[in-house]
Image (cartoon, rainbow, N blue to C red):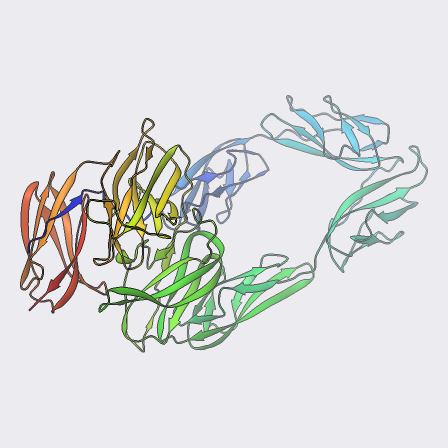
Length: 638
């Protein structure tokens, strides 16, 4: 019997999120002789190369974006990502003031005058408890110690002058290293005589009273002083800060897993190290490791992965043993578009054609400590599978990462199917997850989901706990997510107006038709009847279009017949404007068997599709275009 199905024209929903324009952040001005730190935002590729032109004005570290001012002028800094478009930033390099002239010593209670040949600047003191400075550059000694005096131009460029405040006639400062390791020693000296050495914090470092030998005790900063009694200024001292660093430590290696499948990669990271280290594999024939701690299995066995740090007390090494296995199953990584320190759950899902149901056969909980985490499922029989990942948490439902199927689909019916053969290793089955987008505005959309609703009516049983997404129709970005309550109701707020949205329920085993274009405007910022009906027999979720406001009135009619079919099926349509579509027939495991293009002429039209090569059974037939998404189940009878 010919069945007429009416389908509202909708814009094709894109499952690939659009990346925003990459940009460089940081100051746009620098000083001659100073360093400016630039970085790129999270929309950029995480790796790339920095360059600068002309290098006579400024240079840049090609790996980190640290810009050094060379001479006054304008330079262009460029970041070229390993994937994507290069971005630039114009940097103005301003001249620094000339060196400050004047004495480097002053007695407590006395004054000296400093000057700078470059006019228009302001004077400041780093440690006002040692010395103060007036707007005219007059230095007044306050307490014995070493102060840093700055002369700063309006551009922010500055010159520095060291002033030693003393109550004696000490004419020089302390010399020697300003950093020492805990448990090690350094020696400080001065040309003054007749004084004694002391430490402001002996818990950080001690100093020999007559030798100037400083011994590090614990991490921190202490002031080492040399005090002379008597003299023109009386009793005073000169001092300098000494930093004590912890002994060299490689810290501890962590990872989401201590096993990896041949051909797959897991990520390791190191915490609590006292410096930047180097990753090394002691058995590269079993597993290799790159500079970021990504370990790739090469052959079965155990490989020792090392993180080696060289510091003030020598070299220290942290190790982790990684077991490399040959997998009889499916393996891959969950890859995040930004760093995620989180628990991740991955499901192995099986489709049963006899019951038309999907079942989670297995799951694994993993900790991600970066941009990706590896997973695997072993001991599988020959069959078709899907995999899905989500944050293993019920908190923060409207934010965080959106649950995703392999390889980047938000919905099971569009997910990539893994056709696995027992005894083989299927690696690289990766799942890409995008973070939700924070929105702000007066827009509001609400509705409900009912089960068993009759076509064209709103009657039925409320569906509780169904996941609902709101999607920006133009960009394809999924903005927020929520769950229906006990009455089947859901709502989204803080949506920008002047945008068009789609609403998309997501439930395993059900194929969803999105709610048509909802246009929120400043005069009509809300839509409260975006309702859906869940059909438990046909396994579909479709919108209820009664009482729609701010929804496109365009409609299309699609019909597929006969059902059941034998040698061919007819596809008829009635559309307002011509369109180009794709017709796909797939078995109930999701395997595409037939895929043809179809030109949908304006008005009434019909085409015929041969199914003579298909075996008896149930199949899904889907018709997609820029404005149409239609899916139904047909039966083939021989």
